[in-house]
Structures are given as C-alpha cells and as structure tokens.
Image 1 (tube, one colour):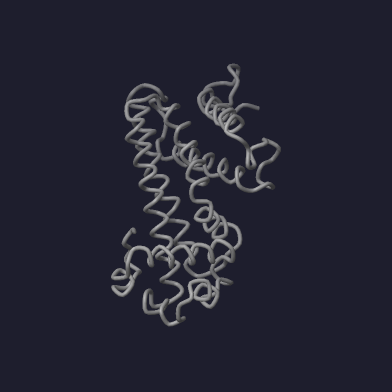
Image 2 (image 1 turned 45 degrees about the horizontal axis):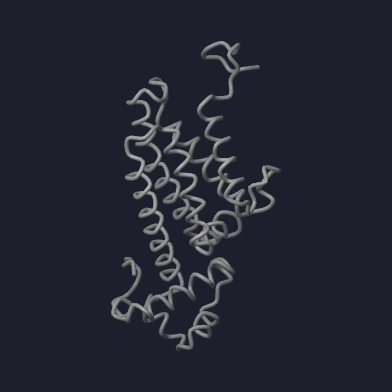
Length: 227
C-alpha cells in the first residue's frame, strides 16, 4: 500500500487487507459520483464500519480524496518510470508509441482511477480542482520534456525544436487519445472508443506517423504557416 501525506497514523497501522478495502470503497465512490456527490455514508455502508472511522483515518472527505489522488499519481509515476527505463536508447517515435500503449494499459488495469480523473476534468467544481489538474499536467510535462530533449540530442528531432512547446503539444495529443478510448463522444469517428488491440495499435501508429512527418506540405515556405 502506497503511503501518502494525507492518511493518519491510525490508517497506516491498519492491516494491509483492511487498508485495501477502504481504498477500494473510496475509489468506487469517487469514480461513480465525483467529489461533491460522493457520500461517506455510502462508503462506510459498503465497508460495514462506523462513519467516524473514516474521519479517524483521514480527518476529512477532502483528505481522503487527496489520499486517493496521491495514490493514483504514485501508480502512474511507477508505470511511466517503467516505460522510460524500458525504452531508454530507443527511437523517439517508438518511445512515444509505447507511452500511448502504456496509457491504454493503465486505463484497462485501473479504470476507476481514470474515471476519477475524467470526473475531475469535465464535471467537477470544487476549490482544489485547479491545483490537482495543474499537478497532473506538470507531471506529464516532466515525463515528456526529457524524452523530447533526448530526441533532439540524438538527431531524431529538429535541433531548433522548443522542447517545452513540443512536450505541451504531445501532452495534448496523448491526453485526448486516452479520452477518446474511454468516452464515446470524444471519439470523433476514429473508432477508438473501447476498441480492440488491433484498432488501438493502428491508431497509435497513425498518430505517431503524423507527429513524425508533420502537417505542412513540402511546398509550404519554411518558417511560414501553410495556407
């Protein structure tokens, strides 16, 4: 079980099996209802424990949510660390494709965690939402920027490329791709929504090839936008 700064010692001292049950109930509740509509009463009813126990473990509903957030970030960090290590020394575009596949695999393995992110992104309106989303975006940039810089250094990307801008654009592409896999109305006709492995692989290759080749035609004047 991942330790976070929002769990009290009373929670950390619980047997790991009970910690996992509490965590599972909280993830289920937040993934289905978001933050505002999530109910501690429903959580403890599912767990068969006293309502006061949750407050003994975390102090507040907000701290419980932050605990789940830090737990999710730790899972994502571990996943991306594995991808970065596994692809070290490989071509930039191979790394990009494998990063997308890792994102799909993460969603398949932790669908409710991703649903919490989507609710935060599209539906929620609570005071700390902006801070959490900013943390996610900065985390993604910290993953992508060094990969871009290595691609430039190895001559796989243009040497005049701004790593910050390139990472920003790639973050947008990856995030939107994963949304299309999970949300029907975000699919835009690509056939990505809940697609099988063959379709996902083909669409990843399509996206990576467009990034590889760029969008401008060969007739577009250098340094000027295509008409």
